[in-house]
Length: 364
Ligand SMILES: *Cc1c(COP(=O)(O)O)cnc(C)c1O
Image (cartoon, rainbow, N blue to C red):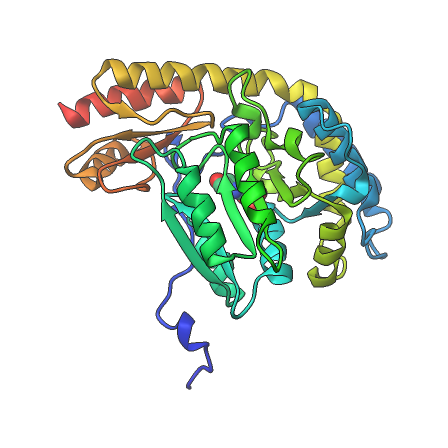
């Protein structure tokens, strides 16, 4: 049988990293800690309550959840100017990003990003027939903002996508640079949004601000977040963004009706209510991250500065061989980033001890 598959999709394979059962799974930047039992209990109780009315469709506008998310951002990033109508939520920030592309991308339109960065960005563009253009980051993975501003003026993209902290490098975007991108984007005649993907925001070092603080001055800014990493809720699938109500209205047009199940909404709201109970885990991961970076540097490796829950390190002549040597010892990391580099997610103290001893054996 001949499948009428889109010609541009022919021969492609689906995105995804290996899901293997090994001692240390350090390849997809998950939170290594299970949700604390107080959170598990809260979720279970809320989901049980939601089940009583599962014959009904969920709240299509997820107003309760979006109100809670706005309140969380007010506490976490002092973004007390946000209301429910500034917030959009979907099944993971991947779906939030897809909604942005469905509403603002499309044939004849371009998005601009900065390589190396998150490998899903070209896929949202491809799936929505949007052209994906990249500028290279500098050798230390920071942005050349003047070059970026010039490219925005020339290319006239509909969106500029910057992950901060960036995946796979961990690089945070300074506020002054985010503001410069917003100013350059504001000059694009047809309009241009600057989307800062802050999937790893909660892991940033103290004193590193969120791009959210720029929003009252730059309303072409969109800040995306997720509960997959810091909230230990990758399995719950909840991502969200903050923007102007006009952006949110546009996203409502392209979302599927009832896209967020009542189970998802109840789960996310329960976890949000306990965000302070999750903070201890985040603090442990941040400390373990800094220890891991210091240890790798002490061994003579180069490590990109990281504000996330992972570290990009190298250089290796044959990174595939190092990856495989680690895997043989029960440590699964990720072959990603520029040639010669590897990325390790920060796990528990025990997992990182295993990573360290396995790495020393492999490079011996
Ligand atoms: C992990 C990650 C996400 C989160 O995706 P979800 O769909 O929310 O699980 C978003 N952006 C980047 C850059 C990531 O690395």
